[in-house]
Length: 114
Length: 112
Image (cartoon, rainbow over all chains, first blue to last red; front, side, top):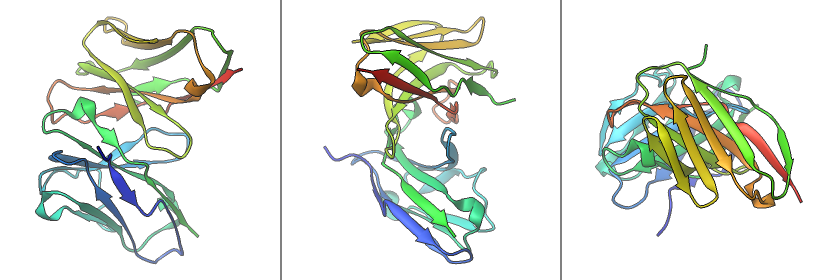
């Protein structure tokens, strides 16, 4: 069974440019999460979806970050415009509904803003 | 104060040793406790989770939770070089909607 797939794996952009990350969760997983992981830190939740509904986006910086999960499967996280401080690893995870203790993570997208 | 605290390490032990990794937490609402392993440039991988206080064993790994002292431990028996990774502990409330709060991770190196 395929795991959580993220693309791209690496992205380098100049500040003020837009960037987008894509995530395909495990088949059948209704819950999808986007996390931010800074170097030497644990993941921090940005947004959680139950199907196509964003049920927790309290940590998402809405002035520059946006996310969508059309049709309740794939998801896209966008940053516009990117800032130097956005350099980090963006992780996508998925789980069965109501099983947040058994979330499966993708390999992440490492973003470098220069 | 972070809700989940871990010693960042690095912790270096010889192959075959018993490894003890520890976390403390401050949120009394935590009911579920998780351990993730993260290899370099990979996403976290769930090792095991426990509910409330007590022990849980899975192969060479044992997770232990003491809610009275807010202390979480992971023991690795017969450690292998392939166990070299960063280990993240995490806590979550009872509700499935509860946010998972991660520690910053402990880097572990097993010397052959």
